[in-house]
Image (cartoon, rainbow, N blue to C red):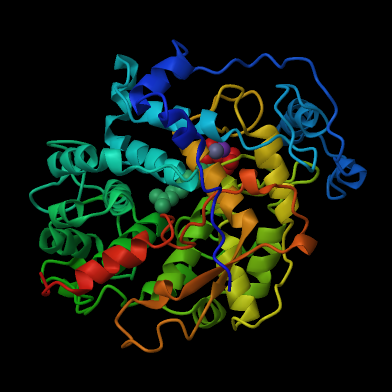
Length: 484
Ligand code: FPP
Ligand code: K
Ligand code: ZN
């Protein structure tokens, strides 16, 4: 099994020969703020756009609705980017815009700086801003160790005395904030960052979110949905927390014993008649929740066992495959809605887990269930902002969220993740260690590569969505700790 590496010399390394990182940012981004020009420049045709892909989706019917109209308008915005090159980006050897690596790196460094006053409304999302930016940077092979101290300091102020993380000092803890905080700390890594997390109060906080029906609420008295289950179990697995519920847990009070009690059954109830997965039982299926559900199941056991036991896999496959849009190539989040670059990860990231469930073993012949080439083309041709950062679609501004998840999706397209039952077979079967069994391979030529080595982003962990090796390092560190 090969472990592909990103290009050895990152653009920033080249730049750093002359300037410090902050000087580079000033130098190259001048006064644009967070803006991107929406004006396409002159268009040069892309030589390699396959004509077959130009046909409209055969699934479209005659009925005109608000949804069909906006779909048509969206296609009008997107097609110029698929069969032309409105921003005059340099093209790779396949005739597709190159990954604008340096511009994206600069964009993400800027996203980690001070925000103007109107961003105060996003204060509760601060952990996310850190996570998206750090994850995006590492995906582009950028070293983020310069942020280690700041990240540790920021989250030490956002940690609630009763456990978990909020958006900042004095804010109530939340499972989404706690998830983004823990992932950010694991990305920067190191003893100080790890030790800053109060694992014992975190265990109490997570226990208080666990409900007697098997699911988790996002916050005390908050909504119960699949994000809660996924975020909680990611934290339990990474921090190696005890599976036993604390005595104050609502589930414990009703007689349940562990974080796992009735959890896969609760996830199973989120699968809908379409085959996809909703936020909670009875909700509409949506790609973002599908990733949370599959990720959560892949934490509890092997994908093969967990998905086949708790989901209707053929129905799931059919629904997931239907999310890839034609001719755009990217993914939509739900039936009859629009393609969006962030689903490059939320849906694109589901495939590794689903493929592992279908293939079973590491020797399984690569099942070709989706078009990697189509996704990579949508990301490179349509989602790269003119001045750095990635976006939902042409006509939208780039942001850290879409940059992170487009890059994660590009990684999903470029690498083949394989579940290896034998990877940790020498060690004891520690609780919640299933997600530490993944290995990775490069995507082979026949799968339709449309990227060069320079357009290749780093491998990320298919379940934890952090740089390869960082989840393993954290788990190893916390396995070396006493219970608390
Ligand atoms: C719909 O928005 C979007 C959702 C219903 C899901 C949002 C959830 C996430 C992005 C993932 C959360 C994951 C974790 C780990 C916390 P929309 O109606 O604007 O978009 P659409 O038209 O594409 O459905
Ligand atoms: K959307
Ligand atoms: Zn989006």
